Picture 1 (cartoon, one colour):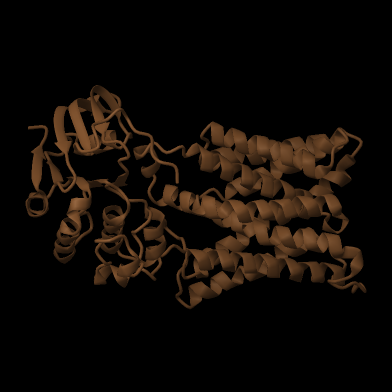
Picture 2 (cartoon, rainbow over the protein chains, first blue to last red):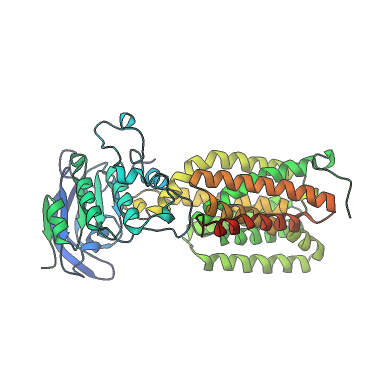
Length: 211
Length: 268
């Protein structure tokens, strides 16, 4: 797979992501100016009222929204995983949970622990049961959890999660907090959620926007 | 009427092999078209290929070459203009149908060639069609291991490519061209609807029945090859045109999907 092209960015040892005085939107700016950094090992939460531009900020970082001012810098070689607020759900296809993990990239499948890159956590038991099931037979919560795991345990250095608790019941939300804490030093995470309790439980830092 | 021909008759060896290669290739291409929700593209490419084949014949080119050039042009235009969805494919179908029939009506070829393109003239396929089908099969076998992971990722994680500034146009263009090529060679060899049916029906059945992606590809390929061989034998035995016979056999296979619905297995 070709390496992603990079913006002129910070040094290797610096943060994964630097956002400087960013103003972003689609037709017009809806968020910013904002400045912050994310380093490897951090889970940063975005908190704000509806319409404050949280998802737009994630889209701008993922090159999916227009930048009206400021700049975004990524460390060279940074690979990004992006879990959307409404992940693509194919209505009828023969893809299984394992196919989804394979599509997400290396080290996100069900290879035995000894064949993984060193230190990667094994697939949690609730997800292992989903690997052989067709995606069109999974519940919304099961599909969401599998998608977030694929993003977190793939090859990405920077993981963008937009409302990862969508469709999750309290038990699965607890599992999601565990996912975010497992192997956390390997990556940085920026996540949007409207659930303050979840942000408090899972994030090392919370940014409030639109206040 | 029952004719005294059989599947392995030396007279039909070249058409049999050429068609069999296509019957193994088109269902794989069709599976990816179905995954991308672009199955109508198969019909669009087939119509444009048929029109290109007829235009090529009027200029003295082999049908395979004319059809391939027309379909490749359409595939490149689709990829480069970023056309997605059924509207673009509907216009391909209309443009191809109109050009094909107008060419047939206003050239020395006459309506009979147009009908032959619609029905399929597999038994007249020769060395040129066999070489084209073999090249397509080899090219597909080499390209799919590179294309499939990228196309699956693009379908399931559509923001990944932009977020990582990947040169996604390479694999999307490559697949559009491969699909166009496959339908062009298929149309020139098996006829318009025969090629479309081989791309669409086996994949459509496999998507409902298979327990996973790799199984779906294997099942689609198996259904395509089995349906083709069955239709080849039936058409020879019963002295029927090949294209409609192939479509009828594949439609009969589609009952498998109905059976899956009745037994409560995964379905669309």
